[in-house]
Length: 125
Length: 208
Image (cartoon, rainbow over all chains, first blue to last red; front, side):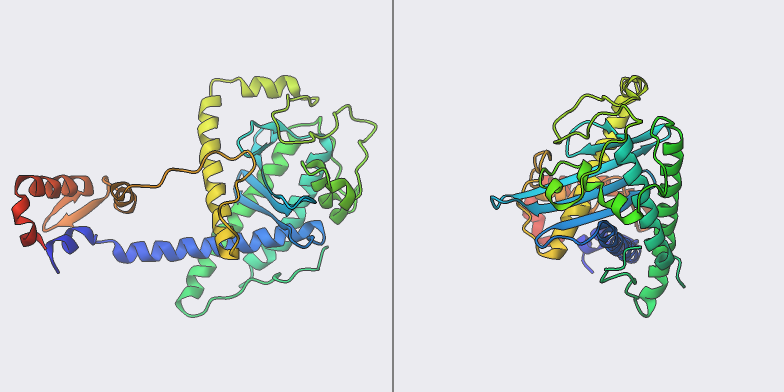
């Protein structure tokens, strides 16, 4: 082992590989749950990509891609930020907006469905 | 409950990966449970949002999230949702341009947004945006989708990293390593190596 190998190969290389495996496993779970979440809203039109998932303890994400009648591709990502005194949404780089009663109701039902579909698989032995 | 799914069951890893997969499942389950509970608590803290569970069929209600999003063609695909007569909330925002906060809770929401910790929240928001973008990029890469379609409203892509910047990412300067009996930081090692090259470039071959 030459000098550069000695200084550039840290003691924790094995740990780094394990951490990467953990990250990959977690990312796979996120992928899977996002697809399940997208299917909660009925049939997905052909050419459309739709995902809904829990990003962390205080964030839900709705992601949709579709092509309009003119052939232009659209991508919209909506982030629902859960704060102690309410849920706010943001799209792209836009500022946060409060939810209307209707959207809050729909989001509430959506997270219930997501929870019912995802949790049994996650807690399965 | 919607059953037209193709991947309702998690694929299972085998061997040594199985243990790690179970561990990550537990972690993710805790995250989902916490997010669900936090969201319920947040909704309960805003009594003006008179959402009523069970008043609309679950699938149809979830369906209608799309009706409140920014797609004009959504009206052709899904049933439009009438605005409840008992609420004074305005119609959903048509597009994602900046819209003033006009809900019944505008007063306290605006006060919240004007609080001094708004800057800290903005930083959190940026971090979350970047995290979401990484997740989205991973999805697109996995699905073989082109990566160059710009996201509406997204910030400009990050500049390409120089070799030194990539090296800093891979081996952060503050990461500690054992060299002999001493613990040194990667930053110290880099300084020592670059100093050795600067001082005696003709000795480069000896370091290989």
